[in-house]
Length: 268
Image 1: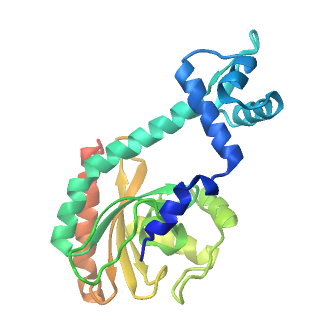
Image 2 (image 1 turned 30 degrees about the vertical axis):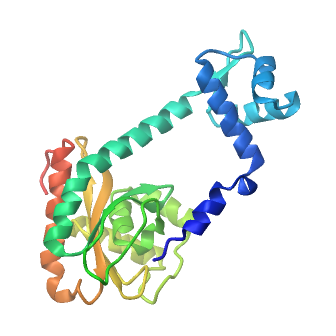
Image 3 (image 1 turned 60 degrees about the vertical axis):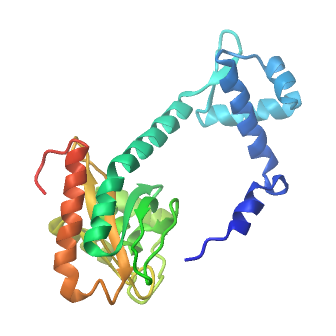
């Protein structure tokens, strides 16, 4: 998979920015710098945004929990939603730091790319990786999103959810067919998730991309909740049926070691 720096440069070019989003983010930065409640008039002066537009921005941010208004003074301050997001970022950074040595060890043992993935808004999101040294390898950039139903990591994370939650995700995201092996039936997906719960690992058998396979296992925290998944991915020829059980045990063992590191005390 190729990554274009031209796309990044275009994205950073002011010509491509969304003005309303840019204004809202600038507004949040101004409010964060004040560290106190600020009145509308003062925000107009600091942001150089007219009163009507600024009021609409504040109302939108308030509806989403990013800004709150003191009913007594009418002044504004940052909302708890930002604290929630900040904590989420901190948790991800800490998890990545903890997991990275385990991914390096897994890649060294298996010769394949190792990944750390979380579930976000019903999709698998890659947040850390260690690439294989092989010339032919799977490469997923950090931040990449993939359909949960068509990936080993995604299916492992779906398997940790109640069936009704999985049904909601299916209704929201659909079950798009990416290859001939992709599971596109809700009933078949639920059966697959039940099998994953029993085995303790999941396989992406060329369901997301032709020629690529993945083996994944869940990472649990001290509350026994699945918080992420670890996987290896590589060409189907190397992740063969003959090596499947051996590789699955390695991935499960790595997932268990990571889980222990973050406080899990249950059985593998």
